[in-house]
Image (tube, rainbow over all chains, first blue to last red):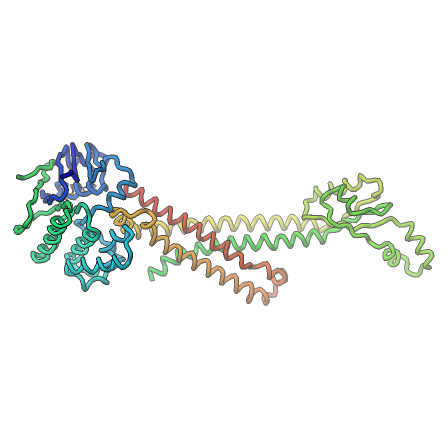
Length: 224
Length: 271
Ligand SMILES: Nc1ncnc2c1ncn2[C@@H]1O[C@H](COP(=O)(O)OP(=O)(O)OP(=O)(O)O)[C@@H](O)[C@H]1O
Ligand SMILES: [Mg+2]
């Protein structure tokens, strides 16, 4: 199995290297693996995800994602790489002036799928995350947990190669959380999607084998 | 309300610029006829011993386009009423030939002097008389008005451009989040700018139509009953249909530049 992600001596920092968040991290993640990332608040979990989708350039070392080195990737290549990622943000990042349905199909829109395909896919996914009746509403008319599920549906809409999820169940009750975990397990199992999930609470019932990374005092460690 | 205000803040300055462009076009057109008018109102009279052909005069100076012979009989008729016909015939044959000269353009005083000198070089030509006391002063006033109007149009356009850029800053702010989200999901620049471009394009179309309607009203309703001579005479030159194309192209160019500016400066913010 090939490596989808490989970090070697990865250092991440803000303010032009002044504020170091992660230092000299080394890890590899293979295709189809399911990874949980935990760690105290402010330890750099979101920062690590940010670097994985190319919004934060490594200040040291290399970070390979899908065969591209994010330390020196060309803008065009980064744009192309991003179309294969399904990103779920801690703060949802929905487009407030778009309907829920339109938000969900953003990745399909970017890939140039027809309106028909977009519509069917939006219905299917919103049904999965139990929001079918909210398709034509706007994000600000939904509760936090509902917005979060829209974000999940969007990340899954184009069957991404890698899912990068930041606290995807942070605002959800146990029932809704389990719905989300099921969706991710399915993607991983049926489509061989690589899944990285930042969470503060690893689900107690989880049917797939998974790996567990902890971020602590600038280091990324695997728990065995 | 905010929606309308947002659009007006872009449409109004754009309209000012379009009106400036239209004023300029109309002014250039009326100027041409006014200059023609002045050229025709100006008289240069050539007195020569023998008949002269236009082509000969044109060899002396290329600005000459017309040479109308003034009938000597008509001069004598006016001068010598009561003279016998044989007497007047004698007088006619003793008279030199008079030509009324027409010029090709509205020329500066110095150039007129040069034409005069060029003509006087010919031995046949006894005298060159110019009658144009008003010519010089009207030309100067005319040039001044033309200059002032162009400066005015220029400054109005600059001020309006500033307003447009200000409005673009607001757009940049309101569209920033969406464009950043789209960028994270790998949307190419054209798609990210798409919505902004559509909004701006709609505004550009509205601005062009408003200006067009205003000018149409001025031309067909206001001008005919304005009571102002110059305007009534030049009604046809006020607003031509082709102008719509020029105005629309102009607003399109402004919109494209503005959108490009917003999108590219947003990109700089992310990095
Ligand atoms: N844009 C930024 N500029 C400067 N510092 C930042 C920026 N974003 C985050 N930080 C800092 O980096 C550190 C790690 O932040 P990060 O968001 O990665 O933490 P986290 O592990 O995701 O925390 P949480 O569990 O609360 O979400 C924090 O100290 C934070 O203040
Ligand atoms: Mg975080």
